[in-house]
Length: 265
Ligand SMILES: Nc1ncnc2c1ncn2[C@@H]1O[C@H](COP(=O)(O)OP(=O)(O)O)[C@@H](O)[C@H]1O
Ligand SMILES: [Mg+2]
Image 1 (tube, rainbow, N blue to C red):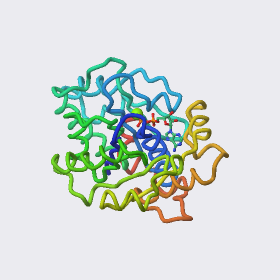
Image 2: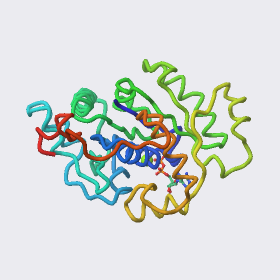
Image 3: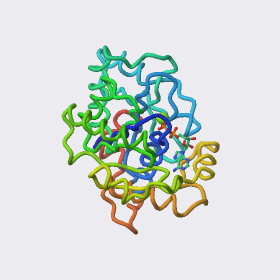
Image 4: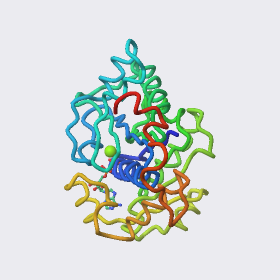
């Protein structure tokens, strides 16, 4: 399945939620999971996980036209938590509109190799971003409880629907919900005429310390509340009920099941 995260503006926590969502899904399911950074320009996904990738989305799409599609996995880097990362390039301006076919091909390849493909689309609805949304089973719209975000959210929902994503695939995440205190979730829902699907509290100390250590929040002993809220989202996405995590190991490895072993990941 493909899950895309799209921010209603920069700085809402899109990368934070995408990275932790992906890491929690991997932790709960032990299934092959990859996160793709679709940002044009230096992205944050690999930075948040303390990785220094040699390859990027651009290498993958530039080579995909002539190579074995399964070889896309050569371009991912592995985090110690088991999550795989396809980083964005360091150059500004790409992926651009002309890359949309490559992005589609790459996401379809990854979707056939991995059980879960998480995409950090960023906060711009680019042509490539719109392609990712169209291919997604779920689109997570990340907002903060402030007026500019909520105004953008209304507009973004309309724009996302115009790309062909039905309301049933859209989920709204209110990040830093506890911080501003002015607008309550109930007030926001009334103004928007929509339900908030998930709320995540503000906890800068924990989020910053995870980024500084290059690990997901779940590996820290800090803030049970934040950990719990992030896990609720991941459980809903991967369908693992509360209180249950899939045990590691088993008759067949997940990499074997997904065909990843064939590609020597
Ligand atoms: N729930 C949260 N509580 C406190 N700070 C947060 C939270 N989520 C994100 N942040 C912080 O907000 C800033 C922007 O987050 P980031 O994930 O990079 O946003 P985006 O990808 O939308 O630009 C970062 O400094 C991050 O640590
Ligand atoms: Mg980001």
